[in-house]
Image 1 (cartoon, rainbow, N blue to C red):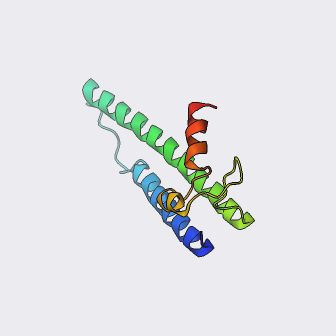
Image 2: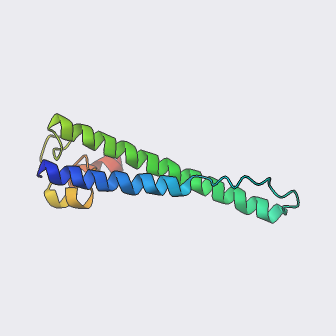
Length: 113
């Protein structure tokens, strides 16, 4: 894959992830919390906070994958499997710019082999 195209794809991914992280950040309204909050409201808020934290964790992992891909690009190994060194097809990199393995290798990796 052309390095300029790879850079553009990775930058688009980084921007998407950073925006999603910013959207999940709690908003400080400056107001004191309502002391008359109902138990149901508290449970809903707790659920939303835990869900958002899980989403944030996933996004941080995705951002780490972008950083690894950017490092491979700088090292001249972007587009090569980290497992075998085989080329990763451009179509896969277009769909998933942070791909670290070929489809077959990724399938084996996810099955734990």
